[in-house]
Image (cartoon, rainbow, N blue to C red; front, side):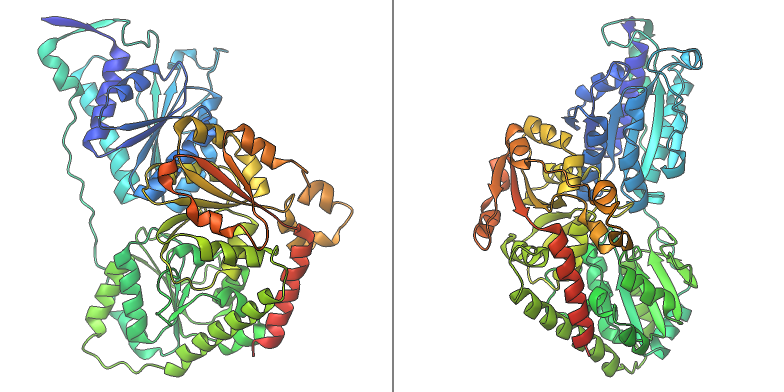
Length: 582
């Protein structure tokens, strides 16, 4: 017996069923007509959690946040036209941060392209420079072989996104009218329907091919002055534990990027160095600290002092990361090892465990001494500085954050100040940066996505320019009732430029770079239905720790600072540090 169906919806059901079978649990959807078949299919998928977000750019960053927190691919659905282009900033961030997204864009049929049809743009591989895989599905056809091919392509996309080449993938889906499930335009034998839409079970295995590591092991055995740099990456707890094991056996210090998360909750591990971005500013120190070997896990640092130290060190440099990425702006590394950090460390430790290794304790002790002395100079400086200075604000915030919370670090000055003034932290904090491309867009949306799939309190440290950039996300927070605590450092403009050479050109600095906005952000925040707190100094910091995720509300804590004065204080601090570090 034949049954009347809508072909577009049959096609979309096959897609969504395959995604469910492959473990996709979340989708972010923005309203639009051409994507109606996709929306209908996701609506009927009980195993997938749906988030409807009006603004496509915000939706993609929201999905990015979910994927960062879960480590699993998240689907994003848009209609055709400029809605597709709105996804690009988040896709770029996902590409460089190796975050899995499955981009599903509805499209007009091919015959509507190039003839002035409404809401029609060329979507063919539109994200080509920042995508791991692209597939144009073509118009749905009522042929079993076509459906089988379609499902295999969906499997390929998910496999790439989640495992083999982690990052964003793009499936473009042209549909011609009728789009609605109730508009019946084809018929199919009922006993064949399941063959068309049932998922094909594929097995995904994460393979790890061991590298020939004896050469590296011998270098570690023979080079007594080595350093381990731990940059941003999607580390597991096992990764961290094995990296620390390797450091303990080798006697190498670990220079831990603040965004890696390694310096949180491990204050007892003295080999973990957190103040290196500060003491490496001193050229005389970098000339003394000349390593023979640098092992770099994850991405390169974004701190200039650390980058210069890496570049100018005339030594053997080895990059270790799961996908074999060239994370080396200096292009001086001699080898890239494509392995998970934990697997690499286990292999190395296995090779060297029976061999006697002579630690250069003086080498490690010097890094520890510099780390501790820098911390003391920093502490003394902050004690004598106004509490409204961002360095003090950062330390007060850290002191009041709850254990095991999520902390998203906003770009521009917040993450830089956090790196400089944070130091080692006794409590465990789950740190999430958007440092793939380091844009200031989509930060609130990303934080909302992280909070949406977490049981722990979630905090976003953000500057005022980034906050203004993503105001649409406040609407999403209110509509979806997602709890988030925004720590807003408002210095009234882009005062990162006060730290750059352009700051000497006072004629163009305020109008084209710092651009003071003079907005009353409290009114905007309250209009969005969020709770607003103006944090006084030194009071009110304890309010931060009293916000619980079950409250299901958006709270914004505004810290007003003087951007120009803070720039002067940073420069003053750097001078005191250089003069006092030795």
